[in-house]
Amino acid sequence: MVNYKQKEATLRGPGYEAKVKYWMPFFGNIGLHDAPWRSSFGRDIYLRNGTHGCVNAPLYLAKTIFENIDEGTPVIVYKE
Image (cartoon, rainbow, N blue to C red; front, side, top):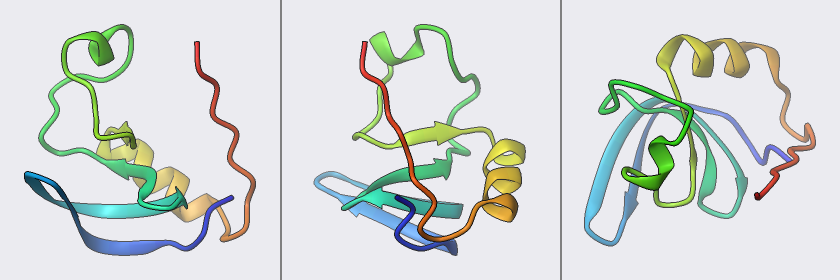
């Protein structure tokens, strides 16, 4: 579930620090956020340019989700 929502967050981990406008964690430090450093999303991008576990979204989509999701909303993640 979405643990909380935060605007203007800085995500940190081993070897990286990333500023995002919309942060919605749902499993520890794993969550959904915008990814301004990406120029494309979807398809098979994860095969050559993955994430540290998060779900990256374009800014417009992260903003729309942020504005329409509540804390506590269940999140279902499918793995192929």
